[in-house]
Image 1: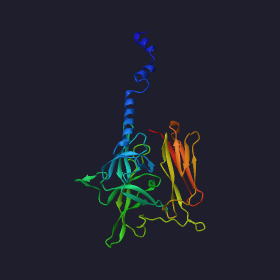
Image 2 (image 1 turned 90 degrees about the vertical axis):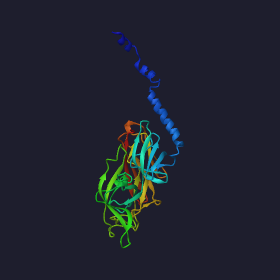
Image 3 (image 1 turned 45 degrees about the vertical axis):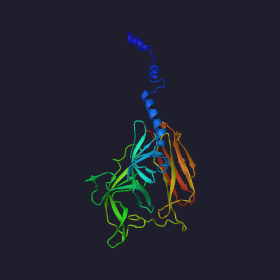
Image 4 (image 1 turned 60 degrees about the vertical axis):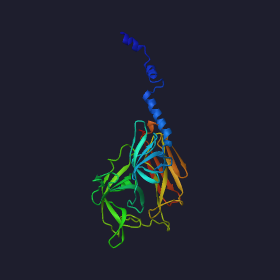
Length: 346
């Protein structure tokens, strides 16, 4: 045995590495990153751009927002902040669509926000009317320009919108109302556009990204099928679903379809009357049921009609599906269900 082998056989290598890295198993790089993150977290609250009351999809998510132009802003938030492409951020007195988001080498969450400039109203083969904040782009946002002027082919627009169970049903050839105008007879009409392309891939990065781009082209307003007052094209009217003269509405669970390990999500219920308009649901008696898979340590709680689901930080939870169900025991708004899939933190 040479001297090298003798030396190696007598060295406690795990202890050597521990001492080399400072005694606690961390490298100098780990310590620098931790110190930088702590400095950022402590300093962000004093940043003039800090928005303590900002929310994402209705949930509090304090962040720093720097407005780069009238329609675009950059955001920064502490590590672990739950923001994804397709989310709606309420800050600076407006709604913003998250169009880019990434985590830098320190874990700081950074992203790009576009100012929502329209509320899209639509139906999905029922009388229920849905409303979603979105971005209608003529080239101003995406900076498609010719000679310094925003450019978009004649009579076409792009619509950026978050994907959810209802917007995912928007399809090719569906007609949408985007704004209004006046005819030569000085009569009001909807500006009607037809979907000719849908892109759910190029703007999505990561498990929870849910951003959709729709390409729409100008179509003709039809006063017989389009409702100017509702702002809806090809209006769908449900038959009176009455029993003893009582109007029946519907409900839907509001919240994301995924939940990361080590986090908590809140879910609420939206109510719709017989005409499909969202209502407060004050006449409902809501009963939640949360079904958690056997072997999972996830927990749920109900407070003031809002369901909170918490999943522990464990790889064993990944892939589990938690089922949320709601029933209106008064029989006015029926039942609804949502399946929530557990995904990893990374």
